[in-house]
Amino acid sequence: MKKQQKKSKEVEQCLVLIKPDGLVKSLTGNIITELSDTELKIVGAKVVQVTRELAEEHYQHLKEAAFFDELIKYIMGHYHTRRVLALVYQGENAIEKVRKIVGATNPEKADPTSIRGKYGRITSAGVFENVVHASENAPEAEREIKLWFRPDELVYTVFDTEVKEVKIDKMFWKEKEEVKKSK
Ligand code: IDP
Ligand code: MG
Picture 1 (tube, rainbow, N blue to C red):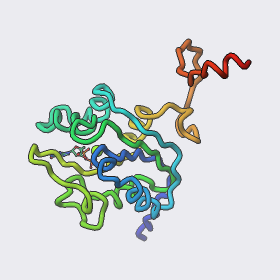
Picture 2 (picture 1 turned 30 degrees about the horizontal axis):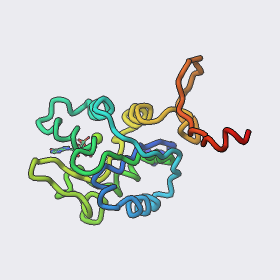
Picture 3 (picture 1 turned 180 degrees about the horizontal axis):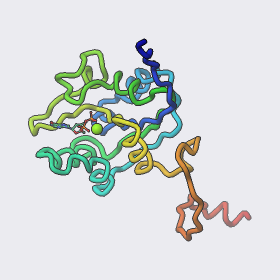
């Protein structure tokens, strides 16, 4: 007898980046609304100024691609704004659910009702400006989330953590002189 294929219901995490073109085009609200159809939970969110180091690490699998330099410039915000909104979605089959709504890599081939199909474009320099990034599979999601977020920036410690004693300089809001004097 044929074994019935069960659809896996594994809880996964998926890194979503609203890329600089998404921010400049004021698409943040639309994208988050579209992704809310997945009924996944947002467990982390922050605005990031992407350094070259972070960009190159994130796209390490494309180092040999002809468009790599342009891609790094794009994600660092050279063409739009130096900001990316990084989000972590969590839930059953999160990666598949998110990537379905995000659409195919090439915005011209993406389903026209997907985020990339609706809002993406190909530039004259040949970059796919496709508005969002979404992790491709579970190992990549883990690698990417660990690259973009520290454990204490997520509401759940989704991967194994360890405690280390470190000495760091931390930035605080400077107290106003009059407040200091009144103490
Ligand atoms: P994905 O973002 O759909 O996972 P990847 O192959 O991981 O696709 O590529 C990362 C990013 O690099 C894409 O989102 C897109 O911005 C850009 N990119 C990928 N393939 C091409 C290409 O053939 N030409 C130009 N840009 C590309
Ligand atoms: Mg990818």
